[in-house]
Length: 390
Ligand SMILES: [Mg+2]
Image (cartoon, rainbow, N blue to C red; front, side, top):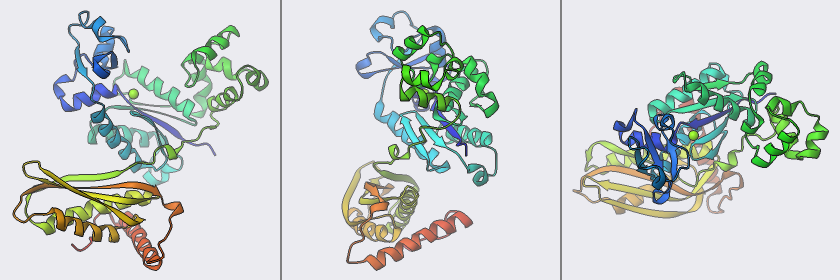
């Protein structure tokens, strides 16, 4: 069966993050600079149109482009936004491969039934969700392999120059030949300078020229990677979406209270909510946490936090809520006014090789079964159908 692969790529990512923080930058020529303001690493479309080159050293161009706003990069902030985007993608499918800070491949195969719409509608929805919920514009290319999805994404970006609303592009089976004829082999993902020079010598210009070559010749000239590339360009997946690259190192949740709080029960209830969402995610990713941390933030932004290691790694609410009660007892001060509580699960390990501790093997399994049926109930009846008592 053909797989359906999408590449989600943020537009001018660092600039878009800066615009999120400072909306006045919208519509203006903006560039983000690398470490120590060395060179340009991200450009708004306006800056591109003015002719600012990617990688241009700042000291050489700052006088030339007086109308451009140059900003120092803030990588940890971009990572935070990136994580929110990747988390959002994981709401669609667990088959997400984070390829870089602003790009991810998704395997959407079989999701038409789940979402009750076409694949084209699914990727449109992804674009809108990320734009509306996180505020970052993205482009999505979709086809039958990563290589073709990447090509489709480039196409979407190109079309945006004239049609800004064109955020998605699909290369369907019947369009493959035509698309390959229109694409230079040098633009294909994975073709380096040397390979391109070599192919040029043999008068191979377009991706179509390339796939028209005999397998034997490709193998002799470029080797196995060349053969793989040909298959991917034909729409036969060789490199599937690799989710092992995506396994998160930690999962955290935090949210400000609707109103400042002095009530411990209320805080515990919010905490239980965070724990539930975290556990749900752990189960979805087939992970266990071996260490949890709770953050309490006071009205005047003082943070107190406490971390504990768990004897048995887990992904069930019952144990974590019990542990969290004890932590909260230590962190909470009567009379202090609080603004938020946060929960972080770290030391994540695969649930596949879980060792059930001898002390409570029976109990652990029971709790796991209970948690799984909880997920199923929520799937059926919606979030919040069950609440754990405080
Ligand atoms: Mg990008």
